[in-house]
Structure formats: structure tokens, C-alpha cells
Length: 43
Image (tube, rainbow, N blue to C red; front, side, top):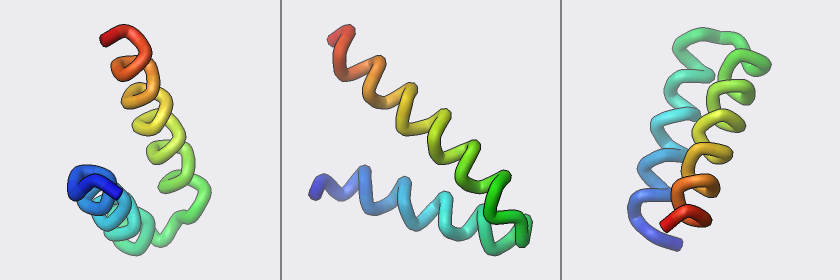
């Protein structure tokens, strides 16, 4: 697993804890993952 992926996961786990809102965190994570996959497909 690339370091970038690990950092992203840690970053979003921190957001989820800070917001104390699991749903909010997962929405952000899905948007971010979708953006990464879209960029990968285009490039």
C-alpha cells in the first residue's frame, strides 16, 4: 500500500474523531476516494 494511501486514511480517521460524526467522515472519505480514482483513470 502506498504511503499516500496510509496518510489519507489516517487523515480521515482524525477528521472522523474530531467531528465525532462517523457519517460526515465517511461522506468526505467517499468523495476523496472517488476523486483519486477519477484522476487515476484520466491519467
